[in-house]
Image (cartoon, rainbow, N blue to C red; front, side, top):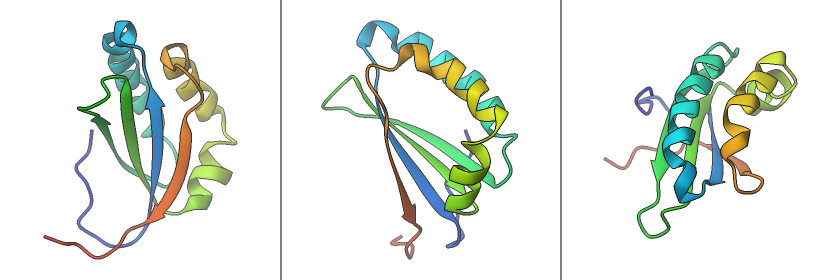
Length: 108
């Protein structure tokens, strides 16, 4: 996965995911394949997966986009989204919670 950006423009999609312990290795492998699809989307910039320490079933997927519209109107309405979902959906324990954030000033 790509590094987090140094610039201040664009938006970050945050998807909170729950993955049962017994499916985590398969999920992480599927996510790698899914990212090959995601990287083809117009406006995609980078992605980073976080695995929560306190709750071993909790993950956060951060995705950098040029704009919310690139994600919602472009990617989600495209054939690429179906391919992306086909890779990761079998491992999700529930529906992902998704939100978008503007990049703020760097703190370090």
